[in-house]
Image (cartoon, rainbow, N blue to C red):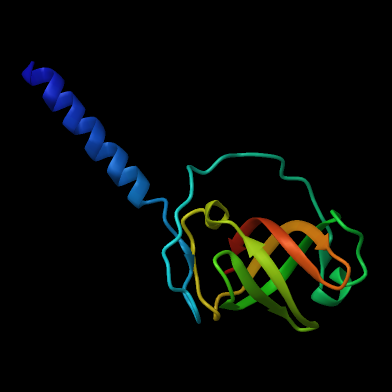
Length: 133
């Protein structure tokens, strides 16, 4: 019986530690809540040409895009203003996409995702965030 309790306690502690290490997100204006995500997973790592915010305005809906720049601020739960030297664009970044990284407006990042076009707006649904050193 004691072995079962000790084993259960050990499993609970390991799980809590693993969960605590997986938090991350944006630390800047309007960063009011801590974001959590699931464990990091692998996937395809092919190449996509680097684009700009200005390029995104003319791209097709659901087209894959890679941008480098900065997140200026959070505007909603998972919506942010992204900026490069050609302009600004709204991006949607789910909590799991941060992969434990903490990003401030001073951190240059690379984002990859899909262009999401509506009748009068363009944003990017981000699938990957990486801090550029």
